[in-house]
Length: 127
Image (tube, rainbow, N blue to C red; front, top):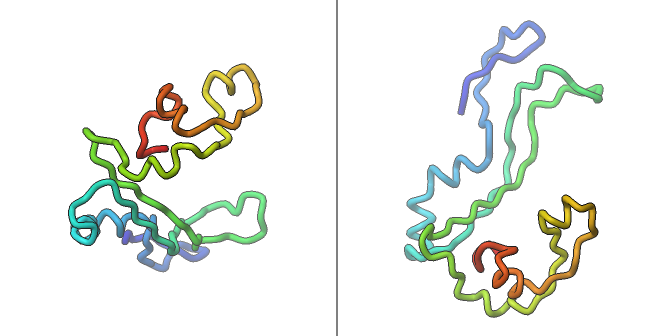
């Protein structure tokens, strides 16, 4: 939580949570224990985040509360192999490589296993 001032004259003090994912990191030890110290694992959280927006931009309303959903995926930095990758390795996904983007080409349906082998996708956990 952080302190901010709200109201038209900024004379009211409020305490707001800036991001939803902070709770995931604060409770990382509990999450790691829940997953029996086995990586990779993911944690998803939905909640409200707050901003003390000064300008309403292109809107008539000044919004301070935003619904957010975030996923944090924790991986072993040395061993990024995902044991269950074999179950999805033959799936085709629309992938748009850097080279394709730079030459204004359309994305291609790519086999995710081939994309990992070629280095287009850096590891099986990410895939």
